[in-house]
Image (cartoon, rainbow, N blue to C red; front, side):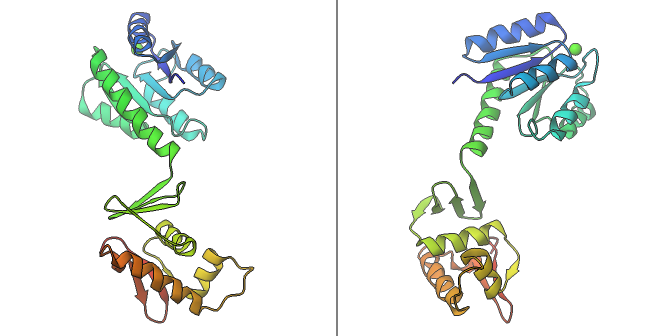
Length: 229
Ligand code: CA
């Protein structure tokens, strides 16, 4: 599937040059000459990435970016800001508005292509797989796979769910009964001691990788996950 890039730029010359170059690299390019057109393009079909010029006839680039960032549908689309202004504080304003990157004009096509690739790679990583990283631990929630220092680690189903819960809520103490509710579900009746048994098993596995200290026992309170130890 071809990636779609929306180019929002009022100067037709620059727009054409960018479109020509990106199409040659295999992207589909949609063009908008102002903010109004940009918003109607996005309403028609969501692009994979947007290039937005700083100075548009009807709106400023940063204002347009802010609007896209406020909208749930467009919040996560990577945005590269094109700017003729080279002053640093202006670029910071663009990044503050929510741009992921910026590129000064005249646009270097080689540079543009490299940044587009980097941003698309990053956003794909986020969309395709849900991965929680905490210190040396990496939990792939789609594959139900734990890696420590990039080594795959085998976990039982309950240990996996327990660790997943901990990694989703780091730095917070959970009592045994809370863990039973959140990890096992309120409908099942299980003794609180069961939590200890599974924590013990989880720690035993982690210990093989010298990582058992991520799950801490807080006396009289419960357990806490902390990967920064
Ligand atoms: Ca312009």
